[in-house]
Image 1 (tube, protein in one colour):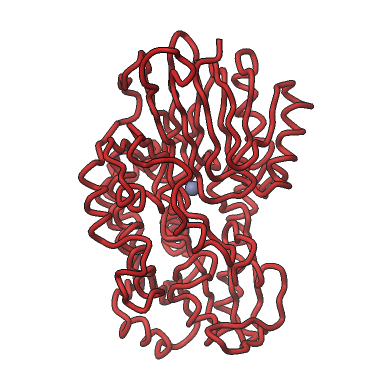
Image 2 (image 1 turned 135 degrees about the vertical axis):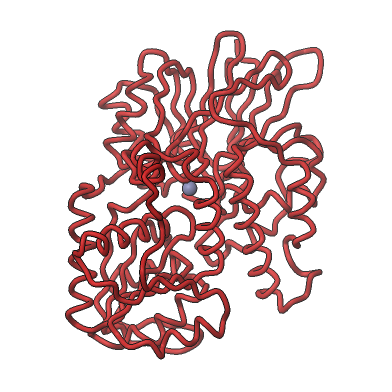
Length: 462
Ligand SMILES: [Zn+2]
């Protein structure tokens, strides 16, 4: 009996903008349904993303009872302050690290929104005050604890292994189960425990960023990274790494730490040139070892200083950032944003891309429409802050550092629940990726998979 309804308000046919509404008991003749949102993220990358993010919700925020947040990436949390500003008064649930990280991510986002609106607070999607209002509604829900949310529904968070604090949520009612995966980690991960298995889902709302591709092996990615760093030292160049502040930066720091400790490379100057990445790394350090994998726990117990090594400099202020240019080469600059669509990295790209001795290394998904994507696609000239910049530096990309499962691992993940699963909704991917995963799930796992349309509602038996 279908008595619940699921609507895809965002994050379908696109990677970003995750926003799903589950109305439990929606088809019941009596009583009010329980309205639960999962994620409320920004659309990122496209030229129309600001317009889409500023647009009113397609539902009444005041009618929503609860919001569950899978993890702190902006494409999953970006619109939360607007949801609150527009009338949401319910409860926001996430794991404790997600709550702390989300606040940092949202504060950075508010700062950028204000800058883009020429410091006119009336023109921004939300302000710092809206973030504070959201944080007041925010409650912690730890992994592996059942929470009753009414109408006989219980929620159980499992570790998604994607970034610190990332969770997938299992909603159970009447012996039936619907699972929202959020983003799924590229396990085994250097820092995090493996993605937990799901074996008894009836429905799955499944990420599909890499639905059509597999990553290079972990060994290959490490060797490639080492080679790029060594080459940069030999060329006396600047290695720019546009880094995602959350997780990727910490993995890069961890690997550089290891290279220096094992004397694979000398301790050349490394700049962490991103106030947000610096704050996020602090939260990682403060959270240690809780939420990390067993190897990290062992290293912490033996007194190792993770994410820190000689000649690593945090450049918090603009003045410190500008002075990086005075440090002789070779050097490494880790700066945001990861897709080069803003942040300090574009200043470094403007300075250093014209020199063939330098290298730009991207380490993950670069969305269509971003400078990062243009560079990865081989652009010979790019426009940075209105200036034509020739790209003579080497441009390298290591996909293996992705924080997402690749196609084969997404298939294996769904395969674990093939006996019970009735429908898999492939979301959070470009259409090519999502549709490729749909086809592969049908062919190899024999499940009913589909890519829902934006705004589409489906009946759910829950
Ligand atoms: Zn994510």
